[in-house]
Length: 89
Picture 1 (tube, rainbow, N blue to C red):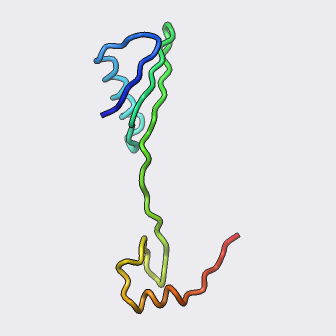
Picture 2 (picture 1 turned 180 degrees about the vertical axis):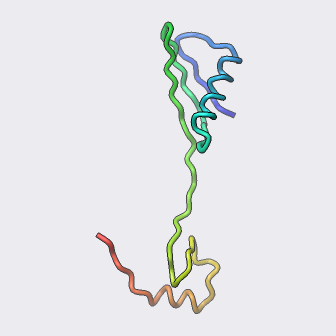
Picture 3 (picture 1 turned 135 degrees about the vertical axis):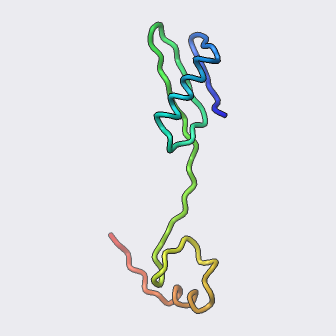
């Protein structure tokens, strides 16, 4: 559900639904939390507010691409602890 705030006038639910559909079509990869629609005569300003997308950092450790070390056994954990870390400037 998208929260829609309309200022400086009124819109029908059909018009609001059309703006929501357009936004979802325009930004299919994003999750729209809310929209601010400001009416100004013949003009409409629309501001979208997107939900944060959680992501997990992936690293290459001891030859494996991993996000966390929770699935490593003791030997692999030891390799990680003994590894020389290089700083990139």
